[in-house]
Length: 127
Image (cartoon, rainbow, N blue to C red):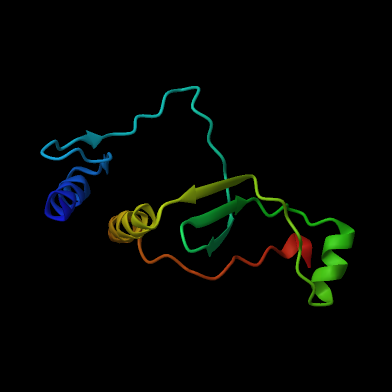
């Protein structure tokens, strides 16, 4: 059964699909297709945590401009507290496949558009 699971995961990576739970001898692929009314969220801040069973990915949008209180706190070195817009809780195998998919997509992006700067842009409006 583990062998079948590995085959399904490898096939899913090649086909850009997510493997479904496996019944012995059955191979199922799932392809996500967003519709016009599928919700989407812009995030420029991501946090990742884990438990023994799951990975938790929190996504938020850093407000621009920062409020005066947020700016004062930032100047003092205090963290800006944001409520996540979205939290995903995923199984460890999904997290590993997400890493693989993101690595692949980043390589394709950089091939097309150039290296990604990993530093947060400095917004002079907030200084």
